[in-house]
Length: 317
Ligand code: NCD
Image (cartoon, rainbow, N blue to C red; front, side, top):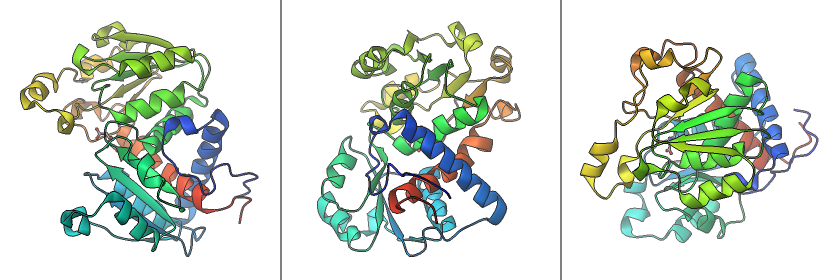
């Protein structure tokens, strides 16, 4: 692979702010190599003999599926764990569970409903832990694959207007991606949401202090024509205490083919998925709609890059 220096070897992957701009460029280069490997040979044995245990305390299709396929395509092993059939159901603590699986694995991938759980779990471990979503906190590998997808399309990460729409309060993919984009020059982020689902104030202030141009509105029409990236998100039903509040807010924004006429020609439409009505299926045929065609496969390539980086010292084969 010809990697000179690997800044992520043996590191936990917990949050967007642990990465420098160089780290992101390093991972994007690595993910591009992984894409080439998969397209050429399907798999490799770069991580032969290494084992990953996915510990998922919350539902997941793409994140878990892509981590499993990523490890297998790298020639590694994957352990299995089903929360409902495990000792977690008997009341076992997170500490005991992760320390147990440390005894079987070289890396643990954790998804958990509580913010901060990944940091906590990593404090018990000597092997790397990868945060695959901690409640409404962060989802760093989704942020990584998203910024990779944007960089791939535009050839760079500068001078872009990124419009993030939907549940910005609870959406952990937004929290990670906005922080990552703030590392690059001349970025504008338009946050579009109903008042109740605005980005947490603290994060808004933090991004502002980094020099990102920020704009907040509840009206997508105000910004769609200036957007290079339109990033839609689902209203996070599982985070609502009041189901009526969710019902009231869930379909605030729906992208239709009509609306796509106002999105510039070279722009892209993204969504971390799952979608539950935010983008009409009729939009899928539009070449700018890249959630299924690019984001999904990039999820696997980026997770291959992350697994390889944390488990392999670095200067190539
Ligand atoms: C996201 C998540 O779990 O935070 N999905 C994903 O990992 N692709 C977004 C979501 O669930 O809405």
